[in-house]
Image 1 (cartoon, rainbow over the protein chains, first blue to last red):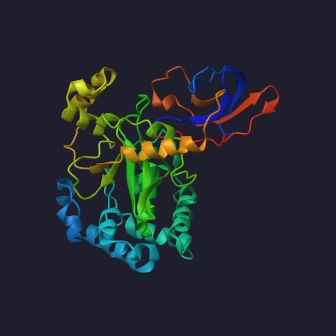
Image 2 (cartoon, one colour):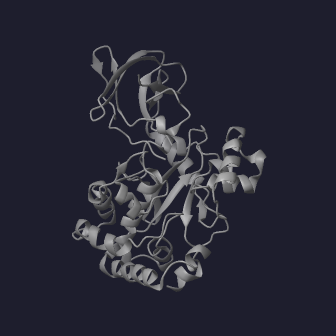
Image 3 (cartoon, chains in turn orange, cyan):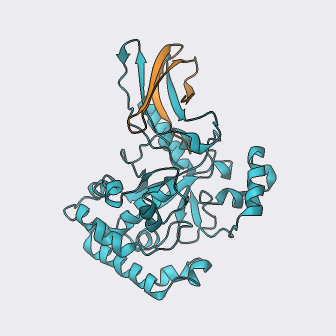
Length: 47
Length: 320
């Protein structure tokens, strides 16, 4: 079981990730930095 | 009828009524007569992937007549099998009023149970979709894995027989052989049955479908403790002590290599430059990262400065 979007990004780069869900009143922004590997998983925990 | 009786699990032989079986057979043959894609099927596919009244361990509720009548309107003008597949898959959630929701009470819900609760997770949703396909004569079966190689859990989905091969599709469809889980399925381990991709077969195949409810526990019995990761052994022992676990009776085939090949082909089609990587995002509602119920189905957008990147950020329902 999982929920995973695979998105092509640049290595070693800072991004802002906006997580939202209109029906559940969720809207939160996370800062991430990609690494140098070809595949990376980010676990984002909502507050 | 003889095919169904010959390979019927013992539990069904002693509990299903003649009326149940007869209605199932009658409406399966109505579909074979009515729809050109079903009429053209070889008997072996029709018997094993259209005619069966069940998929895995779900309650044996009579769905065939209801679904035959319910879904006929979506395919009455279709002559092409692929169009018929999406004519069913695209509106099914609205038609049956069932959406993904981990609050469901039954993992392997039958169509009736899922529709009563108006919710299901991946096994229940896949059963709904597979039965809807079968009701209009489209050969379909469940597929799944007991455990991804990244140990993030299991998953179940649907396959359809088209152009003389099996292709996968989900309850929330994108296209055939395209879904968020291909990257995980493509990393399946052909050397470890826990990480295989299985597809269901009604007819015995010489092996079981270990991606169903308690399939993990059947594998534990088959492989012994050394074959199961230690972190799951305590859970399995608890389930064995506290649940009524039948002997395995869902037959299956190992389709792992097909998914590995599909994934490799998909990578070839979207090769990364040296400075690029694939980022995956999993959203949790709390810090319990090991609990599948903590995962959220959210929209994800990624920004670089003020620039919103063009992404496939349609919310993808988590599945179980």
